[in-house]
Image 1 (cartoon, rainbow, N blue to C red):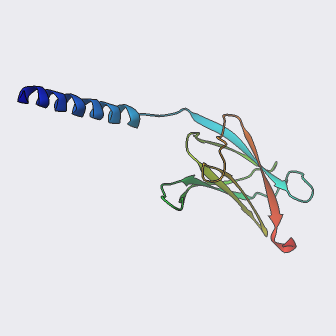
Image 2: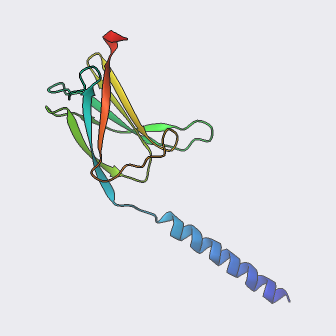
Length: 131
C-alpha cells in the first residue's frame, strides 16, 4: 500500500517537473518593426530631426506594471528607425527630441495588440511649446 502511494507521489513530482521545464523553453523568433516620427499638426514625417526613441520592456508588477529601459535609438534623416526584438513581450516606446514628446504602448496593460513582424508604428510628436 505504501509503495503505491510513493509511486504515485513520484509520478506526480516527475510530471510537474517536466511541465516546468517545457514551459520555460518558450522562445519566439525576433521580429523587426519600423517606428516613424510623425508631426501631430501636419501629419507628415519629421525629416532631419534625429529624435531619440527609448524602448522600455514590460516587467513584472502586481498592481502597477513596470517598464525597464532596454535600448535607445536615434531616428535617421527620414524620421524612422528599424528595431529588432522579441515579439511576445510588451513594450513602451518613448520619443524625445528638442522640445517635443511622443509615445506608443504595446503591452497588455494598455492594449491587447501584439506587435507583428514588419509592422510600422507611427508616433505622433507633440510640441512642448504648444501645450
